Amino acid sequence: MAIVYDDNGLPTGRKLDGGNVKVLIIDDSQFIIKHLSQIFMSRDFEIIGTADNGKAGVELFKQVHGQTDIVTLDITMPEMDGLEALKQIKLIDQNVAVIMVTAIGTAEAVKEAIKLGAKGYIVKPLDREKVIERIGQILK
Amino acid sequence: MRIEYINPFVEASFDILNEVLQTTVKRGQLYLKKLGESMKGVAVVVGVIGNLKGRIVFDLSEETAIKIASKLNGEEFKTFDEMARSTISEIANMITGRSVTKLEKDKLNFSFTPPTLITGENLNIYEYADMEALIIPIDTGLGIIEINMAFKE
Image (cartoon, rainbow over all chains, first blue to last red; front, side, top):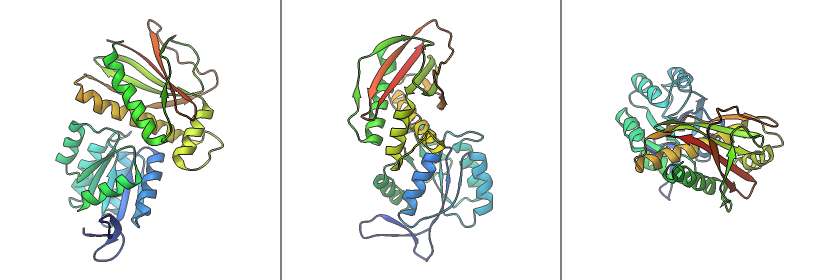
């Protein structure tokens, strides 16, 4: 997926071949879902859906995977954690860009997620400017 | 309770509260408190697991919790509703997450359970009271959060 970057080198939510980049957010915190949605929407990304645990997230991804460009995944969640959800999402669609959004910035957790196919990670708290910059780096 | 166990958590609390609240966060005098004494009204409980056993409670009043949630969401909450609860739980989650990162660097072998938020007047957590809790009061500029730590090796 190639996206349009603005004059400052920051990512927009538009694809080079037209249309908006569609994002699925999976996080057990309503607060994080709200803030992440606001950050993405401020750059014209489209939120295709949200889920508050890994299991519900995988089920939702099965419905929308053909249209989803990015999945953001928390690591510590009830029902199914983010690393297991990542494995299952990659089995459904190898090409979707998965970004881990987590409070735990340990080398071990990050290494495991990258090994399982995550494209990158963002450590909470979510600062709007830093998150946009980081998404740009991850998607380049 | 050894200071090297406490420091990663205190540092993480300061870092996260400063980053998210952007107020002048100050630390008060440490003191000891018997287990079983009433909490302020909102308690976020985090279990300590690994080589250490115990728990950490973020203890704050509902008024302070509402003020903090209002600031972080950029909107005024009148009640401690679901979004406000989610906001306070997430702050605790970020603090424990940052602590885990620091603990890994310091090679200390313990970790934390995900936070559980409980509320109520004269809130009291029943605990096997063979130890005292160390209290670290933090003035957030929006009210006091007491970090109430009790664990043993």
